[in-house]
Image (cartoon, rainbow, N blue to C red; front, side, top):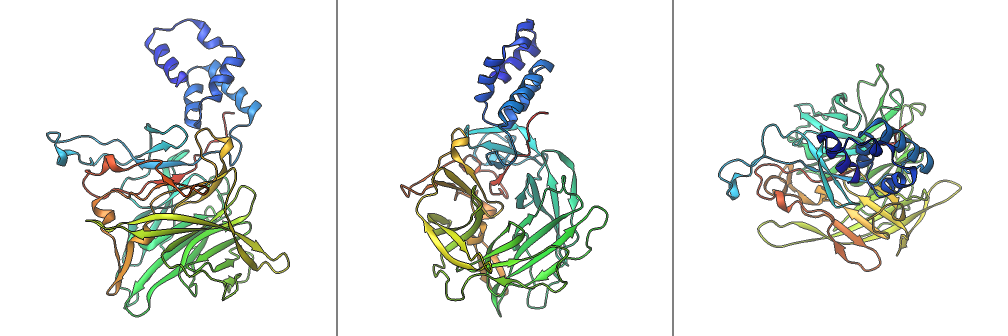
Length: 442
């Protein structure tokens, strides 16, 4: 804030004194200590050459923005233009609104001036390493997915090969929400010749009901695979995570499978069941997630939901349970899911597009022993005839099921609300987590 004020006045000519460019080191460090988002540090550094040099010195001295030391932000609808007479039905999305804004959890502030080029109405089905996976289009043969780097190179998305979901006779429909989640093993900008993209899909028909499919593809600059490798899990899957050297899948009843997607493994690949067949959970009204803790443990998060009444029969979060997955050191199998009543200084950020953990004490305004969550579309769909019918929630109103669950008190508070956007017409995409790409000023 201080940097922004100084920049405003220096540009307007009110401040021409060289003292602003020659601030002592200690006051500058105090100012930067109280700027909680990387975006504010970039604004500070943009004021003048001297301030940029001071910001670089601060970064080198404190290592505040070292790798994996950033708080997730929410990607939300950007500002819209008001059209019409100002009445309730006059707030419309304009055709030019193709960007999204960022919301700071630490400051409770919307950064509308940072318009990220993530197309407003394209579904964001995954976020890894600061990149987004979006559904560009759905063809007769399946969807085309794009990887977007809005922080560093927004103009050059990577278009992946067609996700060749050739519809069978009994699978007549394919919706963009059939793509549950997309993850990638590494940052495509830093590892352009060696990263894997994984896609989790959900389909349904009247013969077998809901079932999941799992696909992955090896990406190499100029030498990518042309087709995806497909594997069908034996049971429905709720989440997928790249953990250590393998991909892990989590089933509806807590089953965990692993798969080695390395290009050096045998051509025929099979999922390895790590949990005992009788060791599952039996709460069907729960959505499950995998997240790696800051200590490197694999955590299983259970989100218990309930159906609300009213015009929109929304599925709302009621509580969470957290389990630590304990592995056998000998064969890598899962010995047990140990329920954890407290995660201490950690905070988990979960959602159907991305899940991550942080140490709350490293960030101003971040609540420890808490789970920050976004709306998850997976509980808003059901089988209707020979296809999945998606809840009208996504067509008629914002996705409201967002909040902060405190493990100690069992209470839920709100971190951001889409209510101000509730009278916008058309599709309002859910808010999703993103970890900004920022390694400090160099």
